[in-house]
Amino acid sequence: MRATALLAALTCAALAGCFGPRKADVSTIVRSLTPPVVFEGVIVESVLIEQPIADAFLDHDLWAEVSPIGVPETQVLLDENGLRIGIITGSGPQKFQTLLASETDTVSPQRTTFQLRKETVIPTATPNGACKFDLRTDLGAKANPVELKQARCGVLVRPQLTANGQVKVWCEPQIQYGDRQQWLRPNEDATKFAQHNEVPVEKYTTLGCEATLGADDYLVIGWDADAPDTLGSVLFSADAGGRPRQRVLVIRARSAKPLAPPDLPPIAGSSKRPSVATQAAASLK
Image (tube, rainbow, N blue to C red; front, top):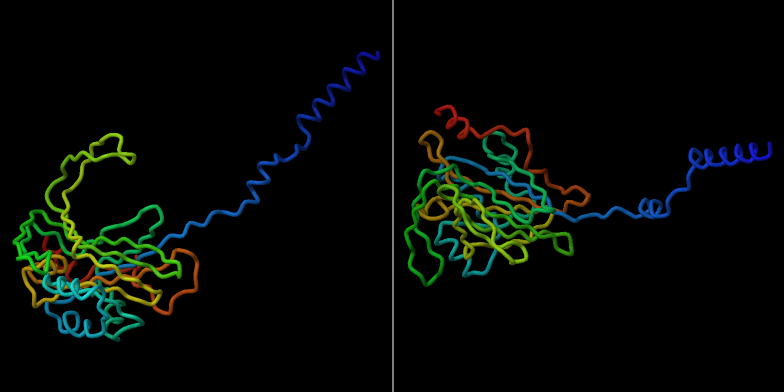
């Protein structure tokens, strides 16, 4: 009898150990009390304003309100290539805000978060079957003719958050062209080569600029319509059923951390419709 009672007691104890409450693992408690890691990224908003070519405001009046960036030599080189870049602080001219708020005068609004990605290319022009322009990459050099087939033009944007909460934005003109080709590229540790299928890209690094933007700054990049057959004319022109159009790229940048909202309204939104020019071109296809 005693043996039977002892066996029953041991069985009950074992069952209580299996089904009773368990102590929380110490490592689980430690992990649950560890604060989540906040990754400081950057949000870049962009949109293209589009008007008839040589529009009085987009081609002339707007740039009277823009503060140029870059060293004087770079500014001259950009000008010789038909390019303009600068910053508008605050709301800018009323006409500027009216165009930004218009669903018919803006194209391709985007909001891009940079956390894992380091850079992106914002398309700025309608695709060209072929483009021709004169390119000057050095103030003392002669302009060289360039011809690219199946051209897709854009501006590379590479933002970086500064210690005081502003954002440095590197902008560089680029043109993809032709069909995909196979290239050999070294891997990350440079121990071997890997094959990649990539579209050829012309990168115009000498025409790149860096701007430091606050929460209420706009970066504007565009083309001088008085400089035809330049890189600017290729990057910031559009065709709507044979009607030439001119574009200006507008960029805002801020930290992805929750902060007090800026005084200015956002410039990108998913509800925007295509521009009048884009709709006209689509209807002719």
